[in-house]
Length: 308
Image (cartoon, rainbow, N blue to C red; front, side, top):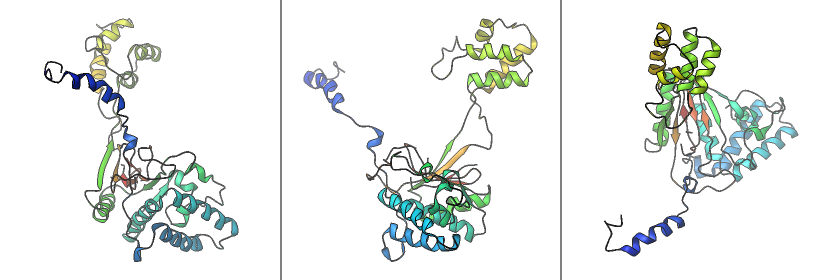
């Protein structure tokens, strides 16, 4: 760099000072949920309150003082964190699935929310079961809420994914996936177990294999590790084990069970409240269906994601 900018030595010398003054992190990137199209242009929180009140009258018969108090408390927090749009989007996905005769069920910590129960997202009464709402959403914890939606796999799941694309825009929705692969230590144990190798031998070998991080190609070969634990490389079963171990590393661990989803994003706008852009969490998800998550630096924040 000094040679390339020999005519600007002062600029080269100042690069360190400039770099030290740059304090950017991914948390500086804001996030805003897509805008749910509320009828008559009312505020999203007002429409959410209306839907919750109507749903509570169906779910709770009667709506007791305790129910009203819990719903008011949850709605105040949802409003203060500017999350009403997220709940409306998840409710909209559930409503659309049921309108098409597609089975859908919310699960996870969302079952602790009376708002989710009143909206028909979840099926468990958290008040009657004395469930703790703060496990789902808490201002002090500063995390996004996470609502998991279970949907059938195949064409019916795909129909809801396409609905999300059409409803909220292809430029604001994207599919995500998390593929878990075999790493060397796990491959040692799984392949060795399948070949019936002694557990104590596999323990010694697994401990000799480094975990995550760079591995020297020469030092990290199965033969080197096997030699260090005293294995007989002339043994046919050991040679077979070494070949399979080497082949398995990097392969998916759960074929057909990768966690995936669809992320919805309306733009990069700062969001107030305890939950900050860049915090890890997510709106909704599905084990064999669709996951609605808020983005971290990545799945699931007024978002919908599909896993299966």
